[in-house]
Image 1 (cartoon, rainbow, N blue to C red):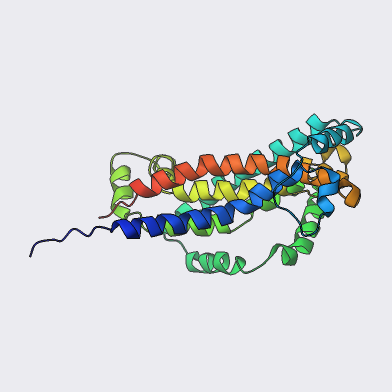
Image 2: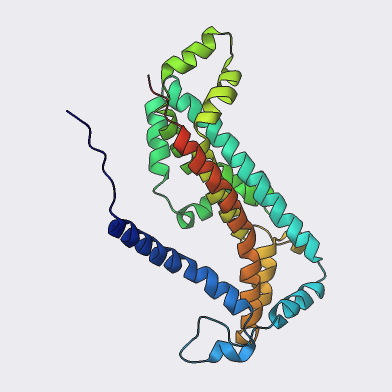
Length: 282
């Protein structure tokens, strides 16, 4: 029986393109509004009905933000360094810990494996609000309050990354691992050369979500030393002075949006490329 090649009609292609364009515009609307708001003069924030686009663009909001940051006794570079340092370290540690923990949970047999997998799945049901008090008590006992570890350590305990990596590793055939072991590769070599490349979509997905969460974290509940606070914390303090600083708040929101968007763009390309070329089967 001859195979029929299905082709989409020209009308169907045009309709699909229109639908995708509509969805793309809808998803781009918050970004456009943030950019436009950062360029609005103060009087345009109080126009009713509100306007999405700016009528008289100005850079006064960014100048006011720079002036407020310059008047702080902690330099802007210090806030920026704290944010980059905590975000990068917590993201890298989160990815490494999740990938290492998922390998034995998915591809090794040991007593209590089923119970650990169940605990990981159950932990996904708890929100950050439920865990905040126990986390604070543990961090206080360890003496990590008011240190960068108070922000970075809880990120490593998230079970979402472990769960995601385990699901990817379930599709990896045991025969591939056994072939590597027969060639003399140890467990570390197997993990680095076979496991990590096959879970790249999961790893880059984790990078996107974890970096965004770490970058936007103020650490207000666990960090009180001004010299250790992050850039979002400083921006929040500046923009919380009332409606008179609505423009400054919009400018800070635009600046804080840039790094996560760049990380998303770079990581998404790797996720899509790896998903298209993955899928080893026996």
